[in-house]
Amino acid sequence: MTKVNDVGEYVKIAETKDISKNQMQVFNVKEREILLINLEGELHAFDNRCPHMGYPLFFGSLKGDTLTCGFHSAKFNVKTGKSLGPVTSERLKTFPVKIQNSSVFIEV
Image (cartoon, rainbow, N blue to C red; front, side, top):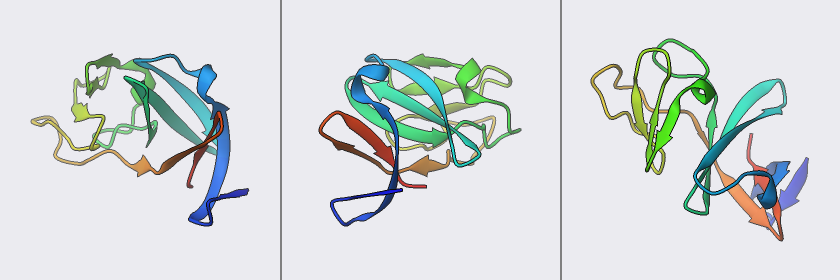
């Protein structure tokens, strides 16, 4: 693990060039799947499992700042991780993201 700015322990998962604007990609980090979303140049990291039924969020869709689970259509705000109801009221599990030079780190 790598320390970034003495804030906490972070793991490097990618380079900023690895994920295009308004796209999402899954990375395996410490035996867990992390969904990294580039929303208009701002990176957001989530557990790749929908809190509703545990299905992979990567198979869903991203439209604007809304992530929709591809299995039961649960919707979430990418900026906050909050559910947009009515399928579930549970929010997404989020991970802090830090960028140092062009390296992307998440706290796990």
